[in-house]
Amino acid sequence: MKHQTAQFEVELALLPVALGRKSAAGSGYRPNHKHPLTGEYFMGQFSMDASVAPGEQARVSVTVLASAQQIDQLQSWGSWTIWEGSHPVGSVKLLQAS
Image (spheres, helix red, strand yellow):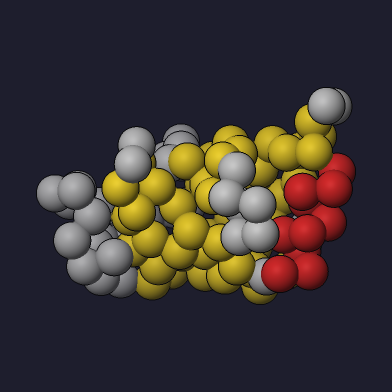
C-alpha cells in the first residue's frame, strides 16, 4: 500500500492524565494516531509553537503519513485518537486541511 503525507490544522486535546507526561512540547511530538473507522495506527507528527499540557487543548498543525484512502476517511470523519503504546493520551479534531 502506497502512503502519502497530508497536513492538517487540528485541535489537539490531551487527556488530563497522559501517562505522566508533563506536556507535548514543540515540533516533533509523534504519538501513534488511531484510525477512527478501522482501528489501524498511522504515523503523524505535530508542529506547535508552545507546549500543550495534559488536560489542555491547542490549535496545532499535524502531518500524517497514511494511504490516500485513509486520508480521505480522516477528512470525512473529522476526528481520531492518539496513543502512546497501548495507552490513549488524547484526541485530534480536524479544523482545516492544508
